[in-house]
Length: 414
Image (cartoon, rainbow, N blue to C red; front, side, top):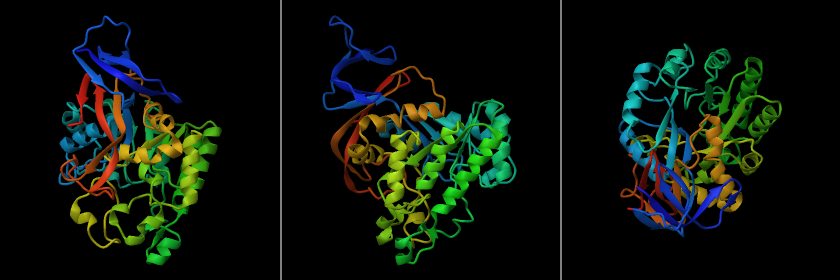
């Protein structure tokens, strides 16, 4: 099936290419080659932008164990309508994704997704940080990405052994690096606002100590380490220096870390209670600089769906986490004036692709979107089972219009 896209503006490299006609044929998007070509459908996309398919390196799911928060079916729909053609799901389910049985269960659930799913296998049993999982056996079933998801690998001995084991098959360790003891009982960023609100704070030190420690372990063992959801200026600087030293290290940041600060929690909105917490203005500026100079390789949704009851209670009792898939493009729109479309797109395409060593054929997966279309994020449009977003029941700008992946062209503007 050949489809002609009229006047499409494609984002590639450091620029937005001039409007041009493109054809989707044979499973890839290519420039129109001749006027005598025949098409099954013609689509006017003069108001749209397009890029290679988007990749999310950090996404949570509820099933099995927490189906009331997110099933695989609802996750698949959320990813599709959010424009992601690839996503890494975390292992924090019940049971944990930690053996070939859970891996095969997930594979069976996601095999018909429009989005390609990469599984992050747990490295410690039940992500408790003690006994290691059967890492080599899980790898034999196609898993190359490992980590304990929302739980940091804080045990230094486990961190060292995992980095050594993963070198047997060129695997990569994903870690949300922070010291849980320095963060214990913390509810938000430690600073003036936490003091004013009477909340126990989570200091920058909890992240900075963990990142520096893990970098030194990586320096000792070798291997491949990806640090997730960096939130502090010193954390960014430590990663920058580690890259300059030639260590095999990469990093990402949650998109909402770029939109909020700790001062936004002044009204005790539990939808803004996340880990790592929203930091101060200096940290946000350092993250933006880290994105610009290549220290931070990717922007992630950090999609963590939570049920109503776990969020709508006293702030200090509410669960951490924010739903972040369908609001991802509207968040990009908010950041576009600061970072520009080419750089933002790099952080959700070529950047994460390099992290997971994806070598897919160029433009075999494409995300098409309208950065100016307004829509309502509400119960009707929400594809997730959870509503834990500060943007819920709001008018948002930026809508994914279509996705090309697995040889299919799927319209989403219904």
